[in-house]
Amino acid sequence: MKMNAIHEDAPRIALLLDTLGNNGASIMLWRLAVGITQRGAGVDLLSRDVADAYRNKPPGADADGPRLIGLRSTHALWSVPSLASYLHRERPAAVLVSDKLRTNLALLRARRLAGTPTRLGLRVSIQQSRELQLCSSAKRRRRLQRMRKVYPGFDPLIAVSRGVADDMAAIAGIERERIQVLPNPVITREFLQQAAEPLSDPWFAPGAPPVILGVGRLEQQKEFSTLLRAFALLRRQRYCRLLILGEGSRRGELEALAQRLGISDDCRLPGHAPNPYPFMAQASVFVVSSAWEGIVNVLTEALALGTPAVATDCPSGPREILRNGELGPLVPVGDDVAMADAIQATLEDPPDCEHLRAGVSGYTLDASVDAYMCALGINIR
Image (cartoon, rainbow, N blue to C red; front, side, top):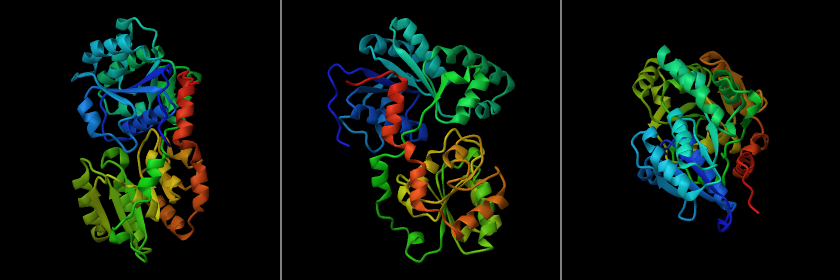
């Protein structure tokens, strides 16, 4: 899509991230920012580390896109003066903030200090109850108290999935009706172009055995150990290979497990792939093995490329994306036997590619931009 000129009288919108890194939430907000500028609005992307923001520019972010503004602070709450100065100077019509509690609090304080009527929206992308379970009881109580104090000050309240919205309402004591569920801008022109790039990996050569693919951080949440065990069971039935793209603290543990299971020759963990989409487009089955999620962008991406998928029925995301199993089987979290059976069944009888693509057509950039601009009350004439 050609970038439209920003209207002189168009409202300015700001998207605030604690830090801008190479993760799903940052990439989705980048895409959203680019999409809004394409509609003719001015967009500022605020981050505590603007240098980091420049390093992590995703495809589609160019010189004519969102402005990058660094808050030059090493702690979220120390950014209040910079935020207040920005709000007073630029007078954005709305600021959308991500779900870091300290950043949320800093933004509310900055608006009070600036004395502006700026509309503040909050976007939550994680299962916060799961995050709280990892905290000590004292820290959990403090965070809950802050959530219940801070979150009502935002309007709109946005969740990336129905499961996240339900979770947010329950733990923060917010009326569920106040929380809007809006689609992520997963499917973009740049994403489709990247997926069409050539792939020289010999595992994907014509006539090679089927490749089962997983993509994500090598951390507890992603439960790749279940996928390894499922693959070991699957290998007893048919010859195939397993590729897991991603990096993280559990690499050594996963490599040791693959060794014990006797699958090391047919299992690769090559690390982070700058462009995972050609692998995704050519995989035989894409698998999500997570213990919990907010929404699973990589699952949507796989389906948008027509790749069959199997996913755990974790809270939350897979059930919504797979339409209660219509677009692919759902298996219990941690159940390697059920996962192996589901992968085998999918290999034997793969679903229609066009049916998969149509099933996630609501996650386009245009659909997401429409939904967010409506929620924030932004109208470009």
